[in-house]
Image (cartoon, rainbow, N blue to C red; front, top):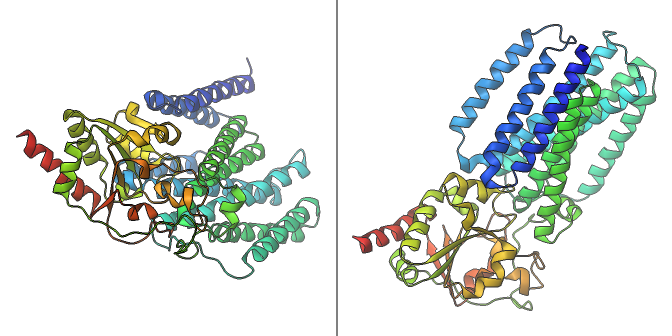
Length: 472
């Protein structure tokens, strides 16, 4: 059997393992096994690629493997679960950067005469696409990282004629790409390469600028998809079948996830990308139809305990505030206390809660909350009126009743978890400010809502202490 057949057979096996692993990631019970299976598939792909006769020097490969291993282990041990959104954004960016480097390396190899492509037009086209998509993914992900890490403002940044400027840059990028593919003059090709590479990097930054922090879950899934498409294009450049397959899987799964995110907000992808949602503090009109009037009513940890002690149906709705205060472990402890007291506890998860897809699921899984207790928005809303208490931990837009009743609200029409239908709502919040998206939450003004102010972890520890005193 020839070397080429063995290599392609190993790639097919790796691709099968990728697909199986991706399928297993859809359920918590099999997610770890799926991650391991996908990792084995990637290991096979890497080993087989390194054994390929096209590899002529292993020095820099070994340097890269060593550096990547050190960085990966450091991230695994040092990066907190609460920092996963920005970590995922950064990893998406590095994926795009890797594809850009592959495309640029191939360009200079061809320009230097090291390699002569069999189909110059096809090679030039995929090189252009790799660098374009990889560049946009890299700088766009870096900007998303800066927003999520709060190094930059989470608000959408807009200016007059912004879409026109972005559109002109995109057109210039396409023109430069066409010139790069069809021109035979070496200097013209080099200039076109420099122009579309630079514009791709600028576009990634400017395209994410007008997207507010509340839309970050969609942005992350979209950038994840783009990193996969860039990798797929890079696979065509270096004629690596398994990279093409892996890139397609990442790209398509990212597209599906992006569509799910948009559906959960009842908004189109174009609206998310170009509406500038969150560019300024958005407040419901005081006299708007359906707007809720009222005042904030604080509650203490002791009074919260009294309410929960009598409850028999409790739903916990986590949001980014739980991640900020790292309260997931004490949330699990409170749920266990409530169950010992005779209550049935559910965790209601909105598809776009937090700042990345599945953010709340990841945090609760890390705290060993049983997966069976997690329920989706569509499953919990019909039974919400039977809930004695709804505990909202740092969530904002995903429980804002303005989405259902206030036509003057920017989020009107977005599906939400109907926390306001519970008999009593206890909202944990640091202060009276708006959420990350800049919207005021009308849930806080309802007569059945009480505000438990302070750090969520400390507040919940106070409630747990009350339960422990009762047990003692």
